[in-house]
Length: 286
Image (cartoon, rainbow, N blue to C red; front, side, top):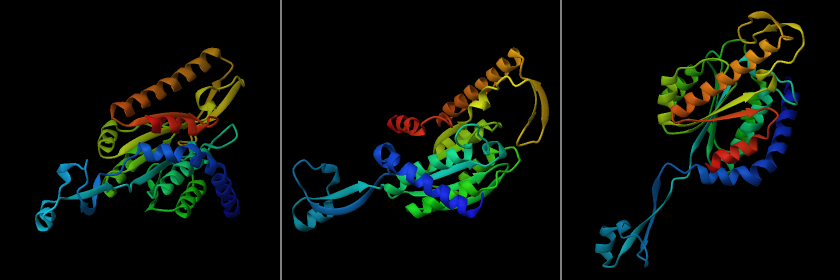
């Protein structure tokens, strides 16, 4: 995409997601994700009903009347958007490519975080970590992240989720909200996912096109793996072949979901023709 096309696309995404974000997602996001704990705010005189465990005994002894410590939630969080930019994500048969759909979801999440004064960062990965945008606050920063997702080179290489998680674990020591976007066409190490999910709050979002799941009857066709370049002829007129293909995809989806849930992570399966805001809203409510 040329720069002018990227700028135009970013603006379209901002306009399209603003109403959706402000109307429903932002409030649910704030309710769902609490801060890292409580932090000291001030000391004031004791009032009826105050928790006696909060009494500041030093100041109480000095002034000979009870004072309590006022604590407030440490609200600031860090959101990391981890995006698969292998070639299979640069594909779509409906209104959008997978990467454009991912950029729109990231915009909604990013604007929700920015509205709550949280930081947002980005990791782009394929067979290795390709780009990192350090977490910062603000809408302008979120727009920059969207631009990076749209303008990335979607490389013909098998995606390696393990490298992205290992990078997260080595660089981000504080617990973060991790939203992972991929079509999960490639395998990953369950143990690394387990460790990451214990430290961070992880949501895997499988973004798929309907043709990822079912192939139409178009006779003999040559298929090429976008990531490995491997080619194979298939007789799509065979009902048995189409059935086996669909069942294999469904099994792969179930297995990935089970692996995430067994790791205390969360998982959403979203079609590029779906309204993603409904899925995110339900996830936040849970």
